[in-house]
Image (tube, rainbow, N blue to C red; front, top):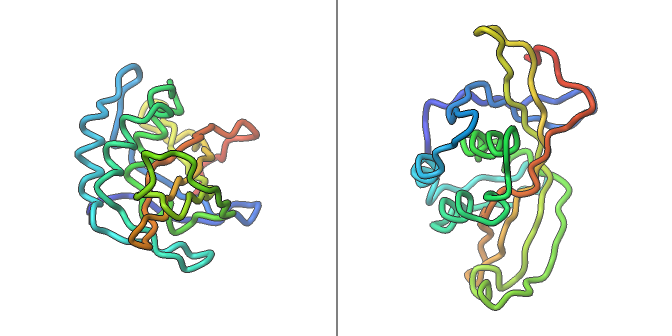
Length: 177
């Protein structure tokens, strides 16, 4: 388990669980050090977290660091969405706890015949990152994403990646606390 994280779970005005990531650990406007993030994610390997909505246990296996940092979906991210994925790595336990709206799909790829023998699950998550102006908190940017969970041959479910990260454009949350 990774220590020294400044992450909170709140309920927003719409009644949805929102994960507040209060510290921007992975900075960089142009270049994000994905090797550093891969190393950080290795600290979660072997951990297990429970989804509050349905009490399912989600494990963190050896595949997460590599898939999270080297997937095609990650390589296509740019700007705020890339920074959001980088910093979402610091809130893996809370993102799993607040996951909702489970959707199942069968495995269709031979390469995943063991690690997703019993299919894939997608869960919705919402998280927020602070925006500062001259060291003053101005607002939080809210993001929506999906946790991609595989149901492996051993019967366990593993976090495989966080995909579909999109900044919500409705209205930013002002000084959420």
